[in-house]
Image (cartoon, rainbow, N blue to C red; front, side):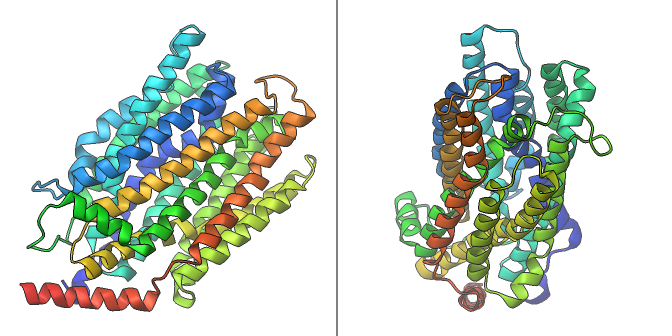
Length: 459
């Protein structure tokens, strides 16, 4: 394909983006509320949750490359990746609900239930999200269109995140009517239904257009070898670990930070929102605005340079946050809005870069392994979440955190460090790794042209 055929219609871009809205109804809820739910609502110790997060997410990360290998070898009339949106949506919704069903069990029974439902949910998440992510790499061969498509994806993703930030705590109050556990259960049942519908809509509105070379034979050993020889992919692999560790640590203790350090008692503050919800909502709005500016920023700056500077500025904003006293709520709001706006374009940029390195792999080695490239990237991200998720529970346990009690100075300091300084360190490490990324935007455009010429000659 060439010329205008590479241009995607608005309906298809929106349809693709809404698939990440579906993901974020659970993913963002897990990031912000799951540690709180397990410790303060379901009644599991923080250290036990940290261990569960680490082990389960480590296993989940291993599943990602396996799913990518399976998806690359899937052949249906719907394509390689789209069918999974149709097949896996319902199990995804059911397991997401079961995690918060809150059965009446003893302490050991609750821990076993959490392990089983969380592990199965993460496996199902992999089965639907790896193909969904890889789909972006085969909807169009145009790097520019993929960057725009990635922007749509993350505007929709963070739109889902905005709904989570704005609505979860009010919905829990409304549905629970004083019973927080019941509120979580009913809220997640609602999110499950919405997620299934959105995944099916993505399936219906998208198409796969980029095909593997006609003469490419299945060779897993060679594919893996070429993947680890792909230096730009390796750089993004390690960058993803640090980025998601940053996200996991900070998000996991957000509710704890405002409940125990700031002293938010959950009472309404602005409209129907308490102070924690207002903080999350304004931050998510700034994040969406940042994503929406991605196209503008890439007109003037290389993707690599943008990623490095935005990561460093994000780190600075989090370090500043550490020094804000608990009675300066509006200062917290202002610093958070600036920091989240700064970080907004980075997810769209990095997923567009993954598609670029998939093109680079085909150009350099003559083999297209989109599913493996994206699943390997998700492995790195899941490992980052594993590291951050485990760290959040372990540090809470280490500093003596006890749920629903007044905290010691040591435990409050631990919560503050996890909300600010520790994620800032991960952001700095991400920026340092990205210095090694070797693909320039001009090289990517030349690779795109040469791949088009190869395909034209083979037809």
